[in-house]
Length: 212
Image (cartoon, rainbow, N blue to C red; front, side):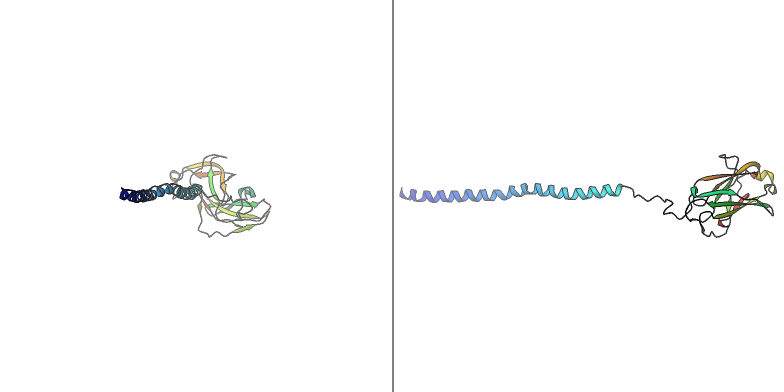
């Protein structure tokens, strides 16, 4: 009986130690799982935020500044008055001097070839091939306000071509696009052109602009 009384506290102490060990062993199994949830959420927030922001930025197309008169050295269509000077006779053709006058309030630049073609009427259809470019090298022309540049167009005497190849057609004038612009200017010039688009027929040939 005395032995049982002595052993009972020992057994109780041993049981308590076993229970404590079990509780201690169980804690590490659950606590990391509970701790991972917030850490995973934190990583998700950190990763998703910058990625979404980067994607949103990359999908926006880059913007470019409009080439306004202030930062574009080329003459704008609104800064030019286009006119036809007195035609001059030449061998087998007529020279048509197209003049470009700077009517703006700044110095601007013209360089290259104007676009030129015969048309049936103001705002009408083009007649035949547009003007081909000469082999001259364009030289930039700086136009101060009031200055003039000129581009010479050689208009062939279409009667020199066979009628069946040329298909002579009455035209009322020419459409002109100043270099580096997209706005057309109509200039009256009643004549006869070739409505054929045969590339072997050169009814108009234009030279680059040059200082007058």
